[in-house]
Length: 375
Image 1 (spheres, rainbow, N blue to C red):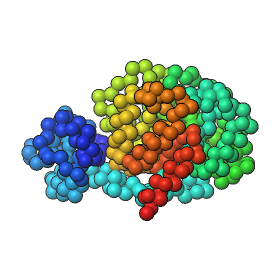
Image 2 (image 1 turned 45 degrees about the horizontal axis):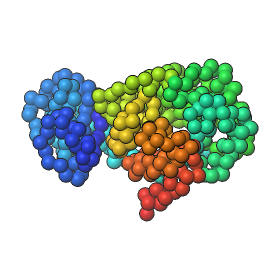
Image 3 (image 1 turned 90 degrees about the horizontal axis):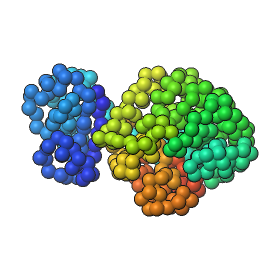
Image 4 (image 1 turned 180 degrees about the vertical axis):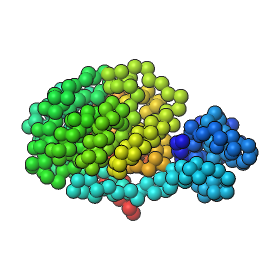
């Protein structure tokens, strides 16, 4: 079973679920829904037989509606399996406590009632935005130092392009590109929080041995599941991202029936696998642009807050993405201002780490958002 809390105060969400479950409840601020998907048949039939109010059924899904308090009361009064109740209560608790999460990552404590900046460092010849610009170790390190000076909280280092249509890079090539850069940054700035952007378990292993403390896996552990063992062994943090297909094929006619719930279920499944391995520091990333149409990206951005009920800090990468160019007919180099506007929007919806090329701009945004949050 997978439980998701949905903010039905969002009129688009209200209409979407109204059409799905054919409910007649009036719209009001503070209205929520809790959808439980893949419900065992005996629980589904037992609850449906009681003909409850404000609870709706479709296929193997059950949908509770009301205020958070009224939904909790419905659950507590129902004569249902305890595991079922706990699944719903956990998702509601996750929503209510998402800003109280904190992680010790390397030498630094991160408190996710605040927003942070992850600077992108592509040590590749073919990344979509800055491919080749920092391909040498010296240029890559100098750019990392610049981002640190500008206030980046995390430096995310990748040795394989994940742009649409990109080709596979061998393990040895990826290691040659990234490890010297990580080693030199740590040598010059030992307290730097470094993330290795890789899907390969052995690359992740060597990176954390050299000082990286975060493994940012665009496949969410699906390309090489052994990557979870590496993260566990080194007590590292992992970023679990959603992708449909592979970088080479992901933009070849991707399709979703309900993009938010499908991405949510993928992240729920992969985070459970990670937690089952004993990993306790997890970020989730809905994977904007990774096997998504323009309308999919916009739906995920608009409903970002609904991912909070998974119980993990949300990381998001919007920087200079192609959907911005598609909507506004802008080249890559002119997308920073729009990126920053979108960053502000998703931070207001609960995202807590912004992955970006323009660190200086993102740092300013996070500072003002953090001031608003703490005011």
